[in-house]
Image 1 (cartoon, rainbow, N blue to C red):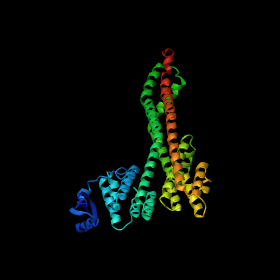
Image 2 (cartoon, one colour):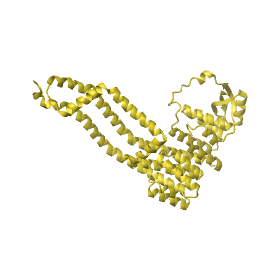
Image 3 (cartoon, rainbow, N blue to C red):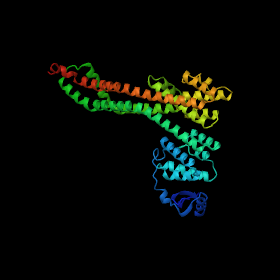
Image 4 (tube, helix red, strand yellow):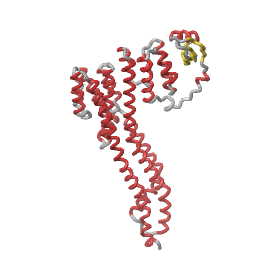
Length: 406
């Protein structure tokens, strides 16, 4: 197995550059560095103790965020456009990348390229950072000699995807936080506060109002069987999560999401924006239409849209247009189908898809703003009903306390 060597070199302008290479001995490292246009100053074998210093936390240390891939792509494009070689650009990227996992991936891609692999093939071996969409567009850029333009287009596409996700998350975060707060407050009152009133009412005697009796019964059940409720909630959460990850479950779950009042419209607009922008980026980069539709189906994020993309792929393979098969699927509005048809007729499919994506991005933003302004007062009312209802139920006997005292 090759060893890892740490090196210090001077570039053609006299600047100091440091980095790491994998090779069998220092002589091979020196040869590689000279071939890259560097003048070696120092080459040291990295000890196994240094390698063991990196502590990896599963699920955190090996994550590469989409935003980091977008920045990586933009910097890569700038270097390629400035005339830097592929290997030197990858070396610089690996040195300045803060994410340890992305740094490792950049180093591994550089090593694979040094061994004779194409950039797209090297990136295809790192699916944690580079999706099939990314690899296909890079491959088209290599073939067409427009790698810098493709990388810039990729960074724009990824950044818009990140922004779209942020908008959707912002619409869901507030109600989720409020719902959790209501659940915690209600649980604390049922387990700790209500039992105190129960003891006091037991000493007073008499018949308590119906709301108070119901609240006391719920409190008694929650205090005695809280572990059952917690288990049921956890079981429901993980059960739904497991079911939605199965093929049949995902099919039904994604269809249900599209039919949810108010939120279903947001899910649909988000899926259409992602479909249009991804297909536009692939078509504009020169990726074959059949491969583009397959990639769109994989990255759509919604099973219903993925089925529509695969049906369209099969129809196009038989000589049909893109717009006609999409017309058979309700998830695509007539406006989208007609705009795609016009794009096919005029030879400007990528531009028309880009316009559709921009339109639905704006629609998502408007929907998120409307939902935020609508959900906030509704949640406040919900919290008032739950907490206020419990407090009123507790104090109802106080209004009749003279009759309860014996």
